[in-house]
Amino acid sequence: MSKPTVLVLCTGNSARSQMAEAFLRKYVGDHYDIYSAGMEPKEDVHPLAVQVMGEIGIDISGQKTKDVARFLGRLPVNHLLIVCSRANQTCPRIWPGAFTRTYLPFDDPAAAEGTEEQKLGVFRRVRDELDKAMHDWKPQFGKPASSANA
Image 1 (cartoon, rainbow, N blue to C red):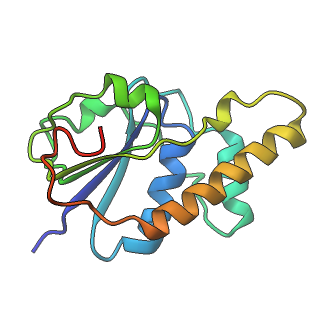
Image 2: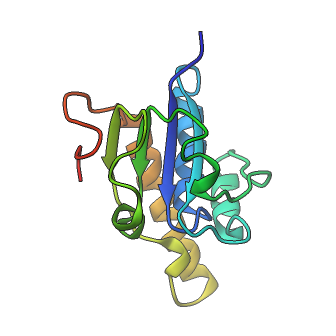
């Protein structure tokens, strides 16, 4: 029997959704197939995302950015988890087959300014926020997927 699918969406698929995907694989990967994608994916996973995840023993260096079109209509996504406000605005309101649509926004660490150490601080903060949220995440049933947490 196949596992339900979770798709984590953000705009660039270079930091937040990649980290969230890794945490969900760690915490619920036995129960779900987990993917991430972007509405406007960047060329590569952000190197500071790779670095801060590596600091806690999670290697995302082999992950690639992916366009949401790769999944829409091609993969039965049971749970859509949107981790940025821009993607929430541009993502289709109705996703074929989705049981839940959860909007759980986080700051964009890739937009951080300042010194390298200041940027790392933002990446670490967002990583830690994502860690806790993905550890605690459970699909919220009972609301139509087209409007849940929208």
